[in-house]
Amino acid sequence: MEKIDRIVTLFDIAGEVVKIAPVGSGWINDTYRVSTAGDVPDYVLQRINHRVFQDVDLLQRNIERVTSHIRRKLTEAGREDVERRVLRVVPTKDGKLYYFDGENYWRMMVFIAGSVTHESITGPLAYLTGQAFGEFQSMLADIGEGALGETIPNFHNIEFRLEGFREVAARDPQGRLAGVRWMVDELLARADRMCLAQRLFRAGELPKRVTHCDTKVNNILFDEQDRPLCVIDLDTTMPGFVLSDFGDFIRTAANTGAEDDPDLDKVDVDMDIFRAFAKGYVESTASFLTPVERENLPYGAQLLTYMQTVRFLADYLDGDNYYKIKHPEHNWQRSKAQFKLLQSIEAQEKAMNDYIAGL
Image (cartoon, rainbow, N blue to C red; front, side, top):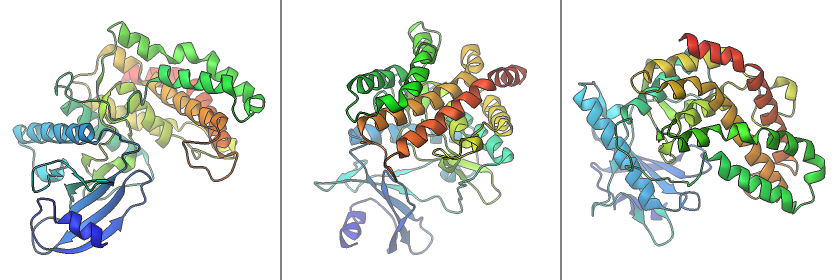
């Protein structure tokens, strides 16, 4: 901790530091809470995983631009408690957005006091989460084209993902293709439809906006009365399709089973969660969502679930080089569970479309 103590002193913080302790169990960044004495705020120090986020300068500029834009919008709107409604980046004493110690990159933010997160989902919570992510996108709808860069290039680009999938299936480096050929064929049979978003974008019919790209309920801070405060974990906030943000929440939160559930009978799409999130999201994006974006939201749920199936299966074929596994067949187990969820979402496509159309 001696090294951490020294790094903290390099940031422009107020008050006397009384305690530094690790928090959370995130697999990407290491996080520490920096507690201070008196009435000054506490802080959050993070070591940035620069193997995942290779352009740290771009990453931090994105976050600063997003949070500054939201803070200005909240202030202009006369919103109360602005400092708890948006993250604040703390610069180093020489004005930089991060510190590089020669080996690792570090950043600091103000800790938002009195906030809580949730790991499980309910209908009312899904509605509030839909509102929160929708409002996040709404406040950033006018940030300006080119304001942000891609922190992970091609992260939600299905054409890019399919190119890698086809390549590894052709190589079959681990000799696993024969055992999973049926799913490879199923996925490739859907490939043309799943590239619809990219085609609509090239045709000028589907815009790119600022998207969060990790729309899980635990990336929302709530206040003491369980009202949404702000969106956190902004590392993947970058240009993308709103369909991705909508779809990724449904993929993760509306799954009645686990992402890697060995019992496929447990895996289904929870339509109550879908309806609750969709209602909150559509209400808070009404000011900017186009008809094409709105009508394709259920397709977004299929797209992100399909994309994750492709990614899990590609990693399995390649020898499990990307995702951490608990046993040799873990990525295949994940692939089967995600594919079952995809089939469940496909079966509910008409009901999803009808519900969105009726909002």
